[in-house]
Amino acid sequence: MVRVTIHSTDPFATPDEEKSPVRRLRGRLASPVTLWTTAGPAGLTVSSTLVADGEPGRILGLIDDESDFWDAVETARRFAVIPLTPADRQLADRFAGLMPAAGGLFASGEWTETEYGPVPAGHGTWAGCRLESERPCGWALLVEAVIEVITVDAQAAPLIHYRGRYREL
Image (cartoon, rainbow, N blue to C red; front, side, top):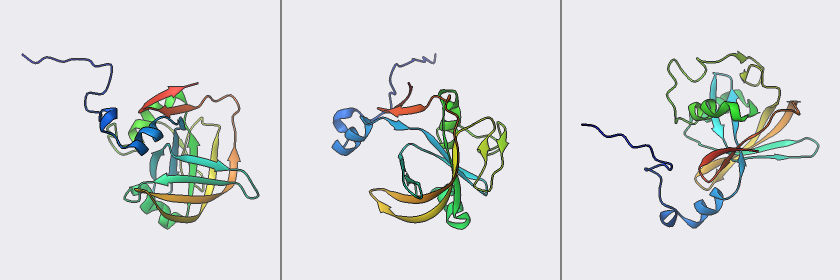
């Protein structure tokens, strides 16, 4: 007999007391959940994203330098950043590699092609970015890009990542 138990927490998660202090601090900072896409197509869920206002505006993010997304961005030098909404939890998990993607990451759902990368159809908020620089930062790659195009849907609620879970405002 196989017994299945539903847990209110992730039974495989590292207990707080065994996490590094830096990881524990990071977990207590709410982060926007964004999808970064580029030609190829390739994409990656990124919750370490910062927008810097100025002329020009910039996007900064921490990216896995071993990801297919980074390989594609090095070639394309352009990408789209899409803030995700509470309805996009499965999309976020798929592009984070936490959920199967039968047929590929872009096989399900509808996509609008842009010169920066595919954008999920119906998403009114996204930025088209041109890669400017990158450098190692911790265990990631700090990517800085100039924002060249922006569309904003003022009604869209953000999906937030906080203490290892998705939250919404």
